[in-house]
Image (cartoon, rainbow, N blue to C red; front, side, top):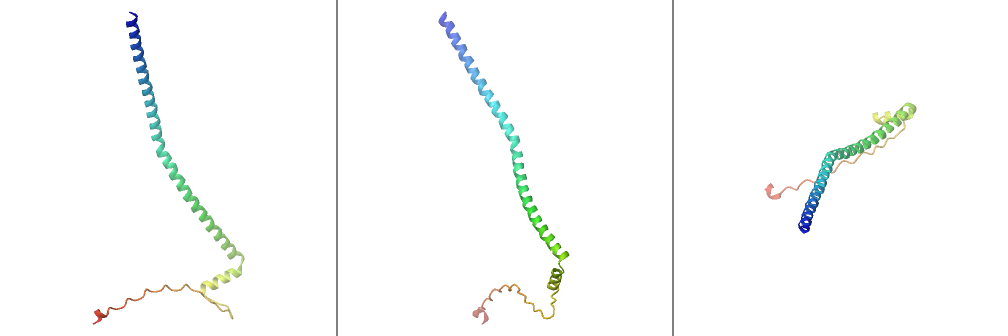
Length: 126
């Protein structure tokens, strides 16, 4: 009887070990599923954060450019308010007026060269 009893215990232990292994696999798969669901919930947020960082960088560049423009305009406003010589120079330049005895030299941009004309076909002229 001991052998039958021992065989039954071995079979019972094997069944128990099998169900423990199945339970461990199920717990692992459930945990893996939870991790995947959480990751899928955060992926769109991570993308949105990256887009917002890119937008922020662009806005910071624009802000820096606007601050530079503001500084230039404030400097010119200061010259206009404090320097009558600057106002006179600016007015004469824009109006094209000169003082007596003054010679103005203007250096204009050269005109773009026109493309060379195509030679007329002598056969078509006949």
